[in-house]
Image (cartoon, rainbow, N blue to C red; front, top):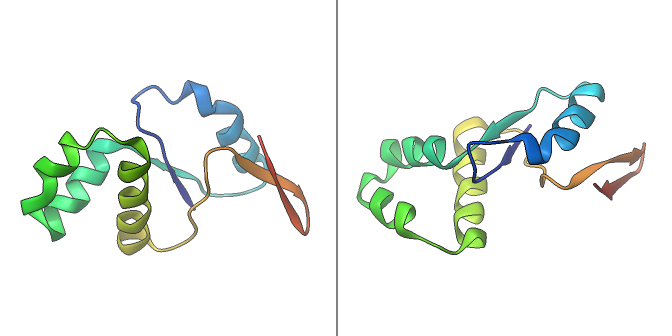
Length: 91
């Protein structure tokens, strides 16, 4: 399970991280440097374009796709948590 966070400081999503760890998830937080390294392995010609992209949603979308390709598993938005056995909630 992974999420994307575009800042080196992950303290703003510490509640999210603690929630999922408490639920037993093996959570990985990937950031821009890790996304760029994955991109470098598969499509190195686009690393500079990725780094220059200023629209957070575009960076996040690419991070999701590359993270799923590289690691598989489940992507979870950094504002979602488990409310019960059949529902998610917004943190």
